[in-house]
Length: 218
Image 1: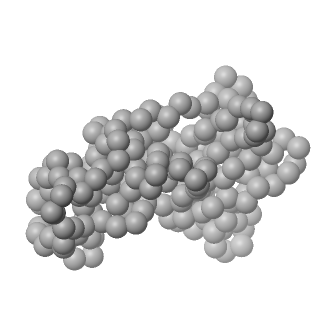
Image 2: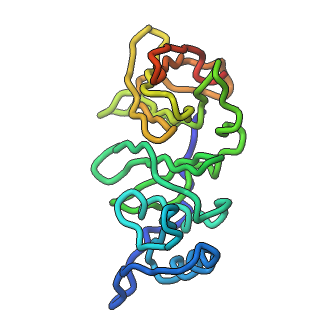
Image 3: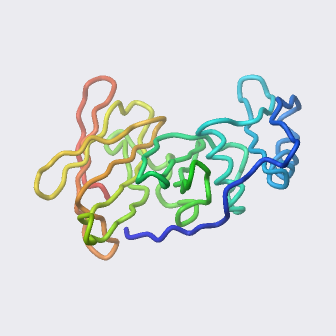
């Protein structure tokens, strides 16, 4: 599906003189922490193992920046980073997820700037099955220009027992996806258009060695 990046907010910056030290408090205060973080420019994440909240770093910080910038993400303290792809020197995408949903975080100059197209509620983890342990999430289709051919970046979700994912194009070429924590992302020459039948097919290998194939958009 052709998508346009919806830039829901700029990068978060640290307030002068404020340090990102560890904050220890109950998970019940997470909502209040999220509001504080949005105002101060510090991205915070809940630690599910200890019930504390810590200053996020790396991809976890980027994920929280996207959640805060969007402002409409459900259960904002539950999201974690997953598969990531770099588009160019300044831009990229980070798939983020919780136990129910996945979304695509837009990244610019190392900061999360928003959620591409909003949180997807049709393609969710609860609908994955043993026969189809993967699903389409979204696509970014880039038109050809004078310096670059047409290409697409595709995003999807999987069950926990999926070990690897490949996208098979209409010319039977195979592109291996980056798979992480029940999500995948892959760059190919072949787009996906919501007004047409699916272009690509998915081939997944499970941890038990079983191979399952099917249309990307089933």
